[in-house]
Image (cartoon, rainbow, N blue to C red; front, side, top):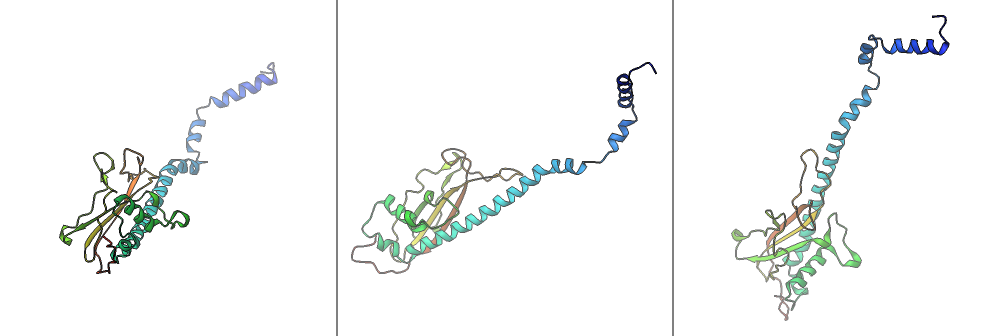
Length: 215
């Protein structure tokens, strides 16, 4: 033993200590750093849950904002203001674009909104009675995209007419964790987005029609 060099003695000592089986129970019983390990295990699902809650709250807020925006818009139809302002115009695309401007404001003075106002689609139809008032379906669930023809129909509402206005817009989906998958669009430009939809059913007031008939 005395003939060994200092380096050899150190190497033998380290080898004996590493090889001792008594060190294993001590390693298993060591609790240092356990909090960091536990946090690492729960961090991902916890952050996913927080993100999902925030997204759900934001989507509910956006839906309420969308409802209020539509109510403000259809009031102009309810009072006849919109029909009078568009008197003589018969092109459905032009009238729907004007209705969108009523909701969103002109390009130079856009009304703040938490949804993509420039992508809103409208469907305006008239019915004989409230029992027959059914909202248009904006989504083709089988194809996972917009229903064919939605956003192209406009029926001018004369005084005392029952009107059904349906508005819809794609809304981005940020979180798909913990079962929160609100995607409605699975194809097309809005692939992966959810859907905000709002409908208003009302009878127009007996507004005064101008010489140039509003409808």
